[in-house]
Structure formats: C-alpha cells, structure tokens
Picture 1: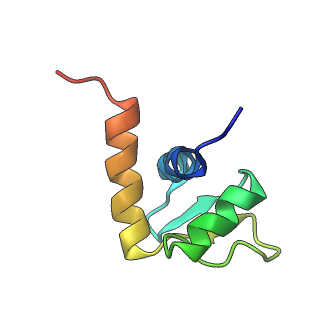
Picture 2: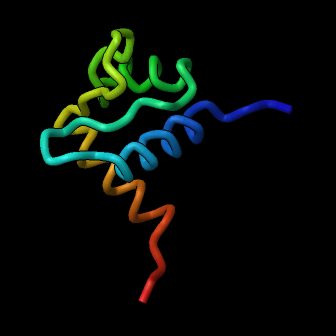
Length: 76
C-alpha cells in the first residue's frame, strides 16, 4: 500500500488545531515523521525539543484552521 504523506500531513495539521492555544502552541503528540515534514513545509517550529508542545507559524495556524473546518465540521 502506498501512503500519501501530504494527506497525512494535512490531517496532522488539522488535528493540531484541536489543542491550539491563544499563544499559537499545540500539543505535539503525533508521528515524528509527519511533524518533521510540517516543520520543513514551514507550518510549525522545530518539533525536536523537550517541550510537549510546538508553535505554529502564522501560515500554519491559518492552514490548520482551514483544514480542520474542511475535514471535521458539519455543513449547515
């Protein structure tokens, strides 16, 4: 089975929105490979540190919310 890593990255970024605080930080309890790819894409800060959270860039926050709304909300 071939995995679409971009779709995985989009899902992880959308789920980061669930724990996003007002300071732009979210819990980083996701697959390390996906987190590293999101960092390389410029959506999050470097996930390799002792903190249990990671900060999202402005672009990352906007994309995270967009993906969350697209994937997880009910259209009315």
